Amino acid sequence: MGRLHGDAPARRCSRDQECHWQKPLDAEIQRLQWLWQPVAAVNSARLDLEAMLPADTIDSLDLFDRMQLEAVIRVCRESPTLSDAGRRLFDRSRTQRSIVNDADRLRKHLLKFQLTWNSVRSMAPADESR
Image (cartoon, rainbow, N blue to C red; front, side, top):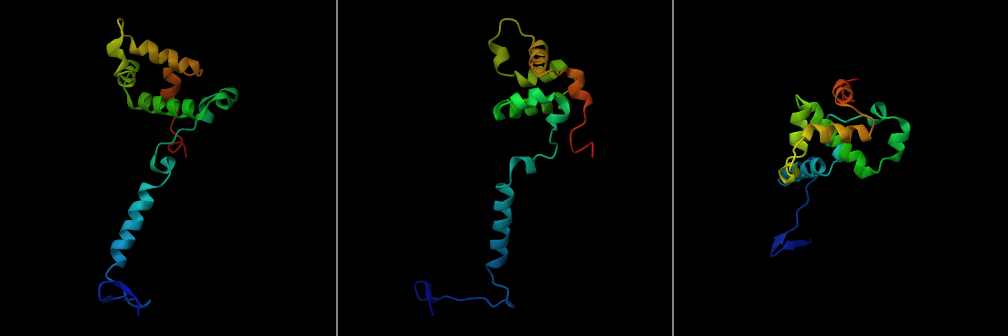
């Protein structure tokens, strides 16, 4: 019989027998699977950018731009006003500006993608529209 360490004999559990280490092992496997799941699976309010943007705009987006835009849209949907969303999104860079107009900065950013505050706020997230 093999040895694990020292003089302790290696023990094997039969299929009918539950081993003392099985429950902690199963719990650890579940924890790791949860930690390693894709970000999209964790995020319950996925955005359907294809429904919000023209096809030519979608085709021109890098992954970085797409992820950034999705985050901006989430903040807009969570915020009661354009100004509040702008303050949240530009919370660090706004302190370095002589003229602070976060709402205008956000409005211009959305316009780069042919979006407006009203269009972002009025479209339901992908999971809610199903």
